[in-house]
Amino acid sequence: MLDGIKKLFGMGPKVDLGELIKNGAMIVDVRTKGEYAGGHVKGSINIPLDQLGSNLAKLKKDKVIITCCASGMRSGAAKSQLKSKGYEVHNGGSWMSVNRYVK
Image 1 (cartoon, rainbow, N blue to C red):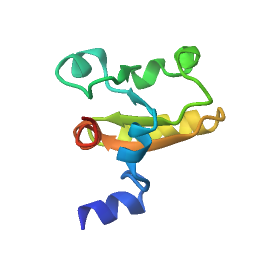
Image 2 (cartoon, rainbow, N blue to C red):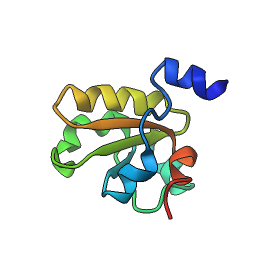
Image 3 (cartoon, rainbow, N blue to C red):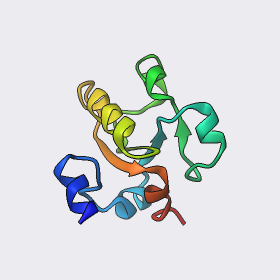
Image 4 (cartoon, rainbow, N blue to C red):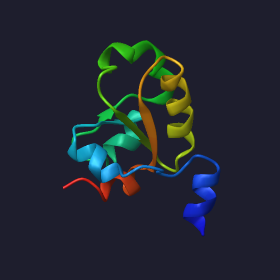
């Protein structure tokens, strides 16, 4: 039921994240540097949400991006921001949820 509510509000994955990751999607963790240091998805990059706009050069428009954070709220905001700039992006929700798809 919680997954249904998350999907309703655009906070949960609507696509096969595992397949996207397997095909080379970039995982962008938008938590603070301190939060990221406390644990993160292997292979992800950390760009805190408040620094996303000034770090767009680190992202490629020809790659799918999966955003994640602690709960899905900041990653949802990051998704909106990146989509408005022309990126293909999906909100993965919490980094722990995305971590299930990384081998």
